[in-house]
Length: 217
Image (cartoon, rainbow, N blue to C red; front, side):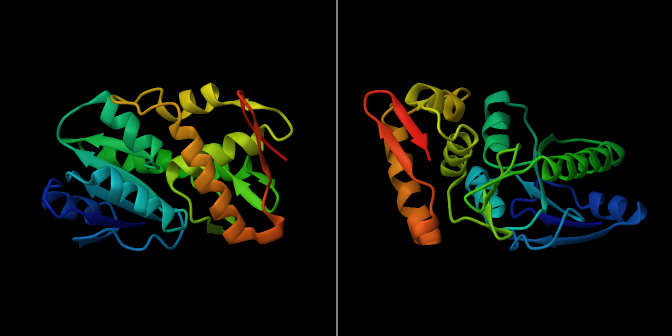
């Protein structure tokens, strides 16, 4: 397995490089997150930075089945929930023995394989159980993580009304500072436009159920 260490602020100690190599894996450090092409034989370890959440989201949206694990030095359950919701496979709190790092990477790889088998295809769009951004023909749709989650919930409930409250809870249940519930309308508006741009006439129709929520058809 190839380990890519994106660690501009040097949160991950250099000693980990040697431990990874000693375990018969390759390792490469990079200041910025790479384009995430390739499969689950690549693990991206992202050191903590002020913009870590945005970096995780960009990495997940860039494509492929790469594993993404964040590495931080302080435990914060709300921060962990945010990172996982944006696409991280795990949130590692340093210091951590190399054996546990490798075990967590392997567990994430097994989850990816399992979720691939349970993927659902609707309107040519593949949606996943683990809230990865939905894909079209193997490439991620150009959606934000939150837009992808809205689309997943609507397509999994196609033909049924999904209330605005249900969508809001699924997106912001663990948020420390949640926006107004009207933000759901903004997400849906952006989602409709991006689906039309990507799929044209084949795009799923998202109907507004006035005063209640939305329905995918």
